[in-house]
Length: 179
Image (tube, rainbow, N blue to C red; front, side):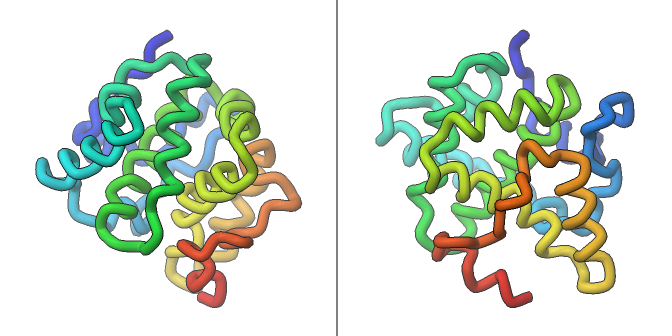
């Protein structure tokens, strides 16, 4: 199965993972870090594409066309995360695409399959990808943050195992651990 990811329509129409999956996350993603950010501009998309092309692949094309079992393409997409050294707009745009592709993937294939793709990555890449996804919970208002963190861990324990700690050994996200 090809993952067809209509990026803009996805953000506007998709509010969470399907309720038909027992491993799906909440349908309430309003207020998340990625939902509240402006949609990526054409210039921002092109900058992300150029960064991926330096690594020898087409980022947006890979997200649009790769199958859920294409470990090489997922590895290229995931490894690009290691190029970000600050939480600037470029990192936010990358995180937006990772988060929305994760929502779509979990809806169509489930958490377990996504976890296998993440687990196949080197430790630093695994941490970085989980941090980009977990940022959704961390950036929630204080009064609901803890419940969102618990929800992610309970509904997708294979993606966020018990030993996962947000921002651990990851300078990009470390400053957010004290929120």
